[in-house]
Length: 66
Image (cartoon, rainbow, N blue to C red):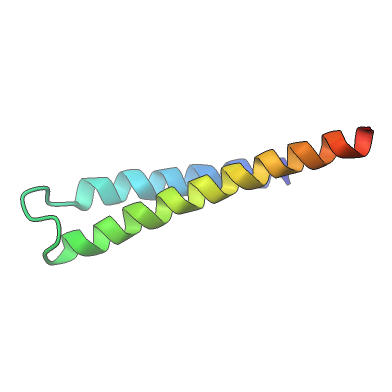
């Protein structure tokens, strides 16, 4: 499970980087830039959720050992 989380984080990070390159910073809310911004926010949320999942797994593992 740990390796799968790292793979998903890497995919989300790659999508985040790709979407940042697609944003037109002169008009970020027009055309395809708005879609790219949605992709950036979605990728960032996915990374945060996966990190929370990883931390919760570590906490659960420590609780079982106690």
